[in-house]
Amino acid sequence: MNYLVDTHTLVWACLSSDKLSGKVHGIVEDRNNKILVSVISFWEVALKVRVDKFAFRDIEIKILPQYAKNMGFSVLDLQEQDAISFLDLPVKENHKDPFDRMLIWQAINNNLTLLSKDKLFQQYTADGLKLLW
Image (cartoon, rainbow, N blue to C red):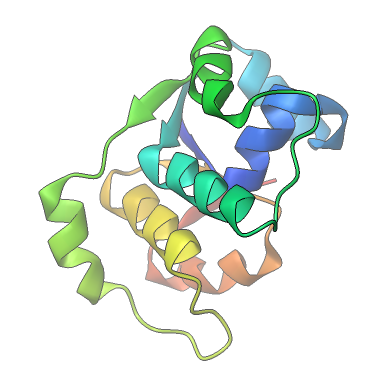
C-alpha cells in the first residue's frame, strides 16, 4: 500500500513513535508499504520552527529529511499538476490551513492514504480522501 504521512505523523514517527496509533505504527514499520513524506511537511516544520511554534531540542531540524529517509520514507515532491489543480479542493469553513490542505490534495490526487490524527481531515473523505489513524 502507498501512504502519505501528515506533518505531525512524520515528526512523531521520527522522534516519538509512542505517539502513533498502533495501526499507524504497524503501517510505518512494515517495509512492504511505501511511506511518502511531502516536501510540504518539511517546509511546514521549517516555518513553524522559525516562528517558534515547534521546538526541537534533541536534534538539529535540518536533519529531519535524513531521519525520514533512514526510516525508509520516500519524498513526494510538489508536482505542477498538484499545485495548479489545488483549486479543485473544496474550501471548508472550519479548515483553511494551507499546509494541511495541500497534503490532503496530494493524497487525493495521487491516490494515497493519508496517515493523520487530525479530526478536521475527516470532512474531506466525501471529496475522495482516504484517511487512517
